[in-house]
Structures are given as C-alpha cells and as structure tokens.
Image (cartoon, rainbow, N blue to C red; front, side, top):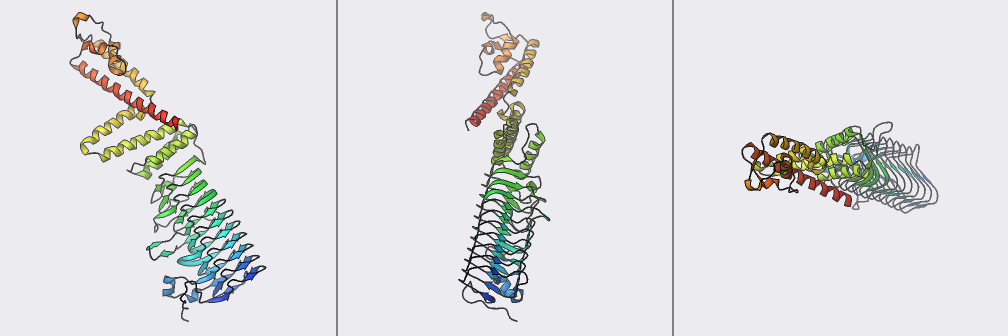
Length: 476
C-alpha cells in the first residue's frame, strides 16, 4: 500500500478513521482499553463536557510511513488542537505510533500519561504547545521516542516525569541540530517539575529546555541521567525561576548545564553535576541557600565547592560564581567561609591579570599577589597585619640593636638612639616619630630599612583595601 498524500493544508490528516471537528459532547468520550485504530483520531476544536479516556488504547500509523514521509513530517495519530476537555484526559498505558498533536488544548482536570508508550523517533511525538492543564500532568514511567513540545504550557499543579525515558529527540531540519527531548520554554508550573528517579532513573537523551519557565515550588532532577553528547546542552535553564532546584544527578551530564540568569531559593547539587562534559554555566545564577546547609565548622565542604568552581572555570576568570557563593555564606552568618571564597576569587583575579599582561610584567604581578596572600589575604584578614607588624618590629629592633647605633645626620642635635622607635618609624607609614630622619643608614642596615619601609606600605595598602571591602559589604 502506498503512503497517503497530504492535501495543501498543513493540518490535513489523510488517514483519519474518526473525524469529530467542532463537535460538542455532553458526556465522556471513551476510546480506552481494547480500542484500536490504524488511522488518525481527529477532534479539532471540539468541546467535551466530561472525560476523554484513552487508557490502554493503541493508535498505530507505522503502516503509513514512507522514507520520505518520515523525513518531512510524521503523520498524526491524534489531532485534537483547540479542544476543551472539562474533565480529565486519561491516557495511561496508551500506545501511540505517530504524532500526538494537541496545541492550545484546555484540560480542566488532570492529564494522565503514566506508563504510556509514544513512538515517533526523531520527530515531535507530542506537540502540546500552549496547553493548559488545571491539575496534574502525570507522565511517570513512560517510554517516549521523540520530542515533547510543551512551550508556553500552563500546569495547575505538578508536571511529573518521574522514571520516564525520553530517547531519540526530534531533528530540526532547518537548524541541523537535535531538538530538546522536552521543551518547556516559557511554561508555568504551579507546583513541582519532577524529572527524578523512581523505579528507574529519569533519562533524557536530548536537552531539557527550561528557558524562562516558572516553577512555583521545586524543579527536581534527583538521580537523573541527562544528555547523550549530541546536543550542546543537557539542561537549558536560562532565566528559570523556582523556589527549589535539585540537581543531584546520578551520572555526569553529557552536555552543558546552563543556569545563566536562573533564580532559586534553595539549591541541591553534587560533584557529578559539576563534572558535566560541557561544564556548568552559572553566570548571573542566583540562589539564597543550599538544601543541605554548610556548618560554620565544615571547612571541607567549602574547599570542595571551591574545587568544583575552580575545575568548572578552568583558566577563565568568573567572579560572579564566587561572589554568589560568598553571598550565601555571608547571609547565613558564615563570614569566615565567605572570606575563604573571596580570597580564592582574588587569587584567580591576579592569575587572570598576569595571563593578560605582557610577559615582562607577569612576574611582578604574581609576586604582588603572593605578598598579599601571605600577609593579609588580599585584605580580607586585616588582623594578620598586627602579627606581621609585631614580627617585623621584633626583627628590626633586634637587627638595629646588634648593628647600632646608626650615624646621626646632625651630631649637634645629640639624638637619642632607640632601635625600637627607629624600626616603628620606618615600618608604619602613617606614624612619624622623627627618628627616620635623624639617622644615616649605610651597608646592610640601609637595605633592612628599605625592606621595612616596603613591608609597611604593603601592609598599609592591603589593610586599607580590606577595610574598604568590609565597609562596602556592610553597606550592601
């Protein structure tokens, strides 16, 4: 049998076995259990006052597919664009071979697709853009070969894809790239998006597209397996808004995790997420706390997170991720953890400065960075300056006690020699005791004096920088 030919209209269904466009059913529409169809079920712009029941039904259009038809456009198994269902859409255990098209459909109750089997490899197997569901959209333990299109959908409660497997996403013939396995761009989900493990892991070979979507409570990817390496992103969460974001995946994602400009209140992640093959883009990603909070005494967790950021950024300087992590620690009262993060940020900053300057200037930049790190930790730990002042004062006093007194500049003034006052006068630039101009240095003592002056200015500038940063944080 030759494949059917479409008419001029893109909405033509040449293999329809049931056409009920613009019909008004005052009760239920039952095509469930042993219902079988080898052609399209078409109910465009219909109104169903009760339920649409498809549980256990089988709609198979594989006989109508030819090589050319499969490339151009999949034939529709169900076509119910614009239909309003006042009750529920029950389609658990349904077997559909071909496209299920339900753009602009309104389901006032729930939409059940648990343990469904939708087959349309490399095509849009479920086209449900701008769909509205009043309650839950459940699609647990489903086997989906192809892509699910839910752009602009509105879900009144949960979208539950727990333990579902989404394989062989659609091919975009114009962009020459694979489409997302599930596309939720601009969607609104009142409660939870669940893409987590259940009786088996949640699997999405293609991208999970969440660009600009809004989730009222939690986006959950616990134990998920994401990406197959053929798409650039495993998750595209650009501009995603959620209260809680759980990204504790089972395996390192094969692709990039894009969280740029995303927002959440609680974040849960793990080391495997940060091992994603395409990295984790957290530029302008904001979160308020971690689901598992970091205790003030838990230094190892802070070091672990810094190692994740360091490995993720590579040689690039990405201050935003460090600022965000420090903001979280500071907001929880863990100021010491916040300081540790900011010190690491400054270390990467000077490393980036050195890499971008001319080779001749790189050693001084690195030396200046090491001096600040060793003395006052780039000014974030200014109290260390007191320790260095005491040590340098003791060292200078000892030197000048052994190698003094120095020659006075003017013998007629009869100055009184004090190794301690001379050392302090050279070491602290903001204090002038007059001893620095009374004595003439020569030989090794001259270089010791220069070293004390240089150390004093380094300590003074780094302490001033630290006080400025502290005041800026307090104002903010």
